[in-house]
Length: 253
Length: 253
DNA sequence: CGTTTAATTGAAAGCAGTCAAACTATGTGG
DNA sequence: CCACATAGTTTGACTGCTTTCAATTAAACG
Picture (tube, rainbow over the protein chains, first blue to last red):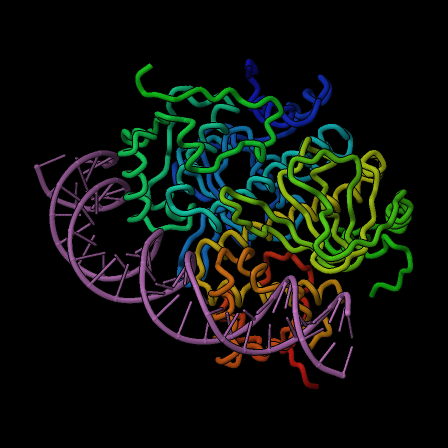
């Protein structure tokens, strides 16, 4: 439960999800200097090639990571949810190799890189927690690679829908029975390594088969077990200590 | 130049490549308790689902990370070169979500997780260096995702061949003019999200076009610029401070 | 409301997959 | 040193999932 009013509270919860943290760790995280911005949808938070002196924490809304390859094709390489530290690599490497862009309207906190380094130097458990988060992020990258490289369109889509459901529930922003999918079909296509036309057809098949229902930008997973089966979805790679309870999702409760 | 005889010397060099480290950092890394094993090709170093109390450092030879999806299809999600810390996630998360297997015969050092934690707690620069390496690893994951998701077979293969050339040169194990590709075409296929049949045909085309030459398990990049062009290869995502000099590679000369 | 953006549909083409067989190394034991 | 076994590479014919191209419909927006 996130009962905390501090902007960075959710970030702390995210860190504490994988590593045991103490009250003084919490105090140190919440005490990080930061400035908060509201950004419109589709705003760049970080650009490829950019050098930056601040790290961004996503407080509210969704963001995504993407890369542009030759001929302008785009691959979305990650979806970011509230509580996540978006660009730790900015603190540790030279220039960014990816773009990060808001998907919805977002609230973002900027933390000076120096402050983050001081925090990690002084609080070993926090440092470890941040590292653990980075490990989870890498695990998700690996799973996506397997998803794109070795599953067909139907399975890819099913897998992604399951992942997003679980992750949204894990941070407590899914309404349990259905969730928001704040993406166009073109974005979904760029995420799954497909074309938007094929994404459209794939979604229709999943709906026709009674696995999901769609309504605007919302998705309801009608038959969780079937969808997870189709997508070969096993959530262990998300490293959520206690498996999140994933009950069948429905529009109509 | 790696003029160091200590087994962990190469690991230190790898860490120092992205973060400035001091002599006492070096001493601390080299002082890590460890045991060394020789492993045959195709030996598992880590298995999915496994919990482990040690971290492995690859000292010599090649290894690869992979995941198995439904119906037994395999996706290779990473190639590991000497000097790399293979399974930091073992130290920070519960169970492994991937398999790590030797490609060639390898020499591996096992370091107790506790010792690694103590090192990171006491040496902030080393801790930062390890984190930076993890960031680079993640950057490679992202690039591979873009490679698999948004490039055709020809470009995918070209990109991978370029990456491996640069990375091998970066750790000083490529003979500059040509390098070892210690993989079967089936493994290449599982890495690129293709079939072995198509990998075979793709390699033949690259050779016929005069971009590469093949001989056993060795590859020679005949026309670097052309190959990098075909593969849309830009090495910035490898975050090698000073760009590695990549001269055209040839067998002869 | 008109305008723009996103979703949907149909038909045709193509890149890569599948299946099966032949060929080439490499290695082993007699 | 050769016969056989095994693993990996190569080739051909055919199939098919996904893309491409184009046009239409629906939704979102100011």
